[in-house]
Length: 177
Image 1 (cartoon, helix red, strand yellow):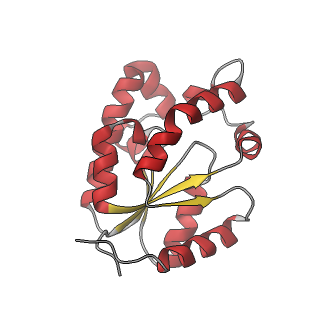
Image 2: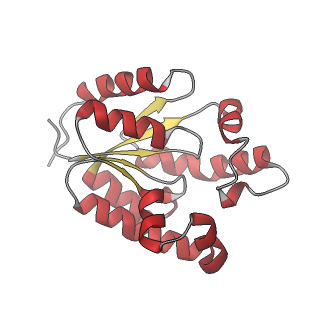
Image 3: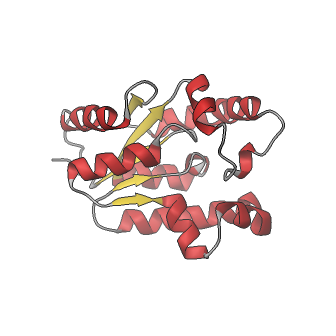
């Protein structure tokens, strides 16, 4: 169907990359790879612990390696962390090996989804809404540069969103080899 074997989901935290990714993978009968979960499994510790011990730079190195490993694997639906697009090498690898979908989300919905989440080191601030807005301002151009298509993940229930995204992907023109 397409020259790029993977479907890769990018976007801000709280956009639904993991939830939607699992459902989309099941719908398409493909494996699902959550890069953050893979990083934690490989490191034997949480992302928060990696940030505490190695800083963001150490985490980003691990993230780039996990991405490369996933892209070398069997065709899958891959969910990245929100900051995976910060590295130019990651962006190039994503576009070359996957159909990249940028999941957008309304800021109020994003904040509501993340309100009780204490696992995200970048949100451990006095003003999570301001942090999310700053991250989005920095990353939005990178998401758009990397994506082959955008999909609003704000309002549909997860099952309906997975079905709608699968339909959108099915209508894409085959990618050039």
